[in-house]
Amino acid sequence: MYKTIFDLGSTNPIDWVELIPALLAIVFLTVGLIITRGKARSNGLPWWVLLAFFVLWTLIAGLLPYASYQRNLGLYRSGQYHVAEGPVELFQTSRDGKDESFIVGSSVFDYSCYEALGRFHRANACGGAIRPGMRVRLTYVNDADIVRVEKRL
Image 1: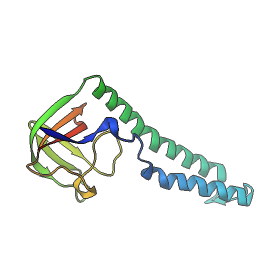
Image 2: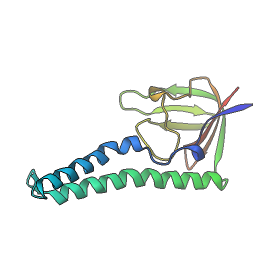
Image 3: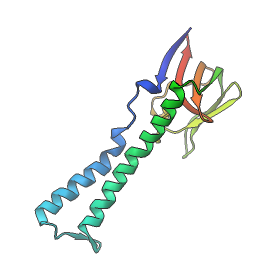
Image 4: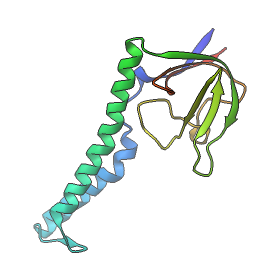
């Protein structure tokens, strides 16, 4: 018997927390433009270049994870996935810029809590639930994009 820890279909496709800095930059630039009536310059660049940069940055930061989420969710829902079942072996926590990694069966998985690419990415450093020796059933698409994590009870 298994308990579901993570299911891609029940998560938010966009991590809004990661977009907050870019959204704040857009708000501050817009307020600054209103206050200075568009005459502000920073580092010799016109205001619209800065505003365009932050708008583009926000769109890319939101759309790339969303596109990945939709692709992985589509594969998962259409049954184009693989399952790895067994104990978590060769578990390496994320540290010194390296991703968390482990093996289940013959499948190798790695991820970082600092990515948002439409898959499971909750490393131990960020409160993740996967532990060494834990018996799990992982559903994944592509090579190793985990879309469902189940823990054996």
